[in-house]
Length: 174
Image 1 (cartoon, rainbow, N blue to C red):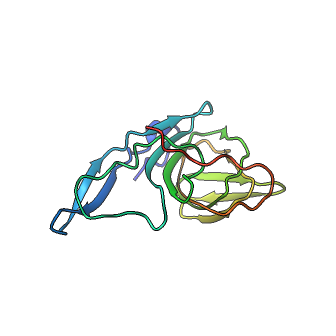
Image 2: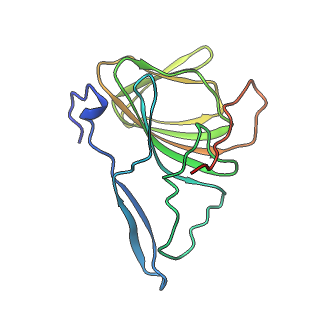
């Protein structure tokens, strides 16, 4: 459990990523277990850690131990076309991100702290344990508190809604 006074990103516990699969005989096992290392640092101090992504839905979860680490890919803000993006983002105290929109269906879970999501004409405050289904709306994240906030995001590619300009889709550069 994080320190109740997590005033910086460094005060939160490190993330541990566990990826399961099957061996060649179909026996379930852990394939990856450790700290995810694909982290992006924004000018505002946010730290975004990619946990996993997919290129298609339904996703390919074929049996076998030799799988690509889909958490090591370089992606943009939006998920890959027809795919998904799962990331954990740490928002330092008193930080604010740009308002943006993706053509995606996003599941957002506040794991730690408190954060505001700004929309066109409203603001919603979320606290640890709150969940949101965000459906392609303009939004921006602002941490107005003295503590770090940690959120989990699952973004799934969606059909364009034709409102404004969406952030471009992810790409699979290595």
